Amino acid sequence: MLSLGPRVPMGFPMNVAALVAAPDAPLPRLPCPPGQVCELVAVVRRALLEQGRKDTDEPSETESRPEGGDGGAAESLAEHALLAVRSFLPCNRCKGAESMVQGLRRLGHVERGLLLAAAAPDTEPSALQPPPQSRSAAETERRALRTLARRGLLTISGSRRWGRTICRTLLGQVVVERLGPTLQTGTPIRWRRHRVALAAAPRLPVGELLAELHAAVTSLRETITTTAALRAMNRWRRRRVMTHDAAGDDDKLALLDVVIRAIDAARNRLASHAS
Image (cartoon, rainbow, N blue to C red; front, side, top):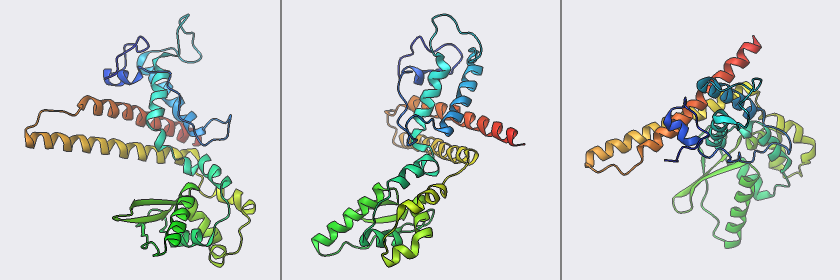
């Protein structure tokens, strides 16, 4: 458990306050263009700040703060909450799609064949066929898989020993839907003509991005809860002394609850503005 510093006032639950002890941790880099703030992060951060200030009776941004005061625990909590869910931001349905489209380059014969053979998103992944017997051909296939994954067109799971599966990403699916015949014939693709349409296809409005983030964070919370319950059951069956830090799971769940409430508040605000 992290030690509590002077930046954590009364008002936060102790397991949440413990996660606010390192308030200066920077947010990981997002795929947004330099100098541009992620719209989704801005909406969630605003809801987190409002929620945190309400819970701790901190002054709002328009109210005066005590002389010499720092950013406050609400801002610290907001930054930590965003750090906790950074990996679950649906960047592939927002600016991340634009960034990946800009990186699309020539696709060779092997890359095209693998992309066409891969399963569509949200379906059962396709089993990757055994590698060619020729060492050079096998290396060509591995290099093609790495290229497709690096460009955000394909996801690869499994291992060489137990078999691998491939599945198109959302961007990969859009490329196949729009340029399928060109991929099949081997005709060179002039990416510049298609970049605007390819980047726009996977994008979602902020309200739907919030819904995707809410689903991802809720799923993560359920996974942590289920895993903790299974650990407890296993310890009880084997009569073992508790070695897992149960308080650590409580900390994670408490922080995720804060994020879920903030996302709900942001979605309600958008709905009220739309009506």
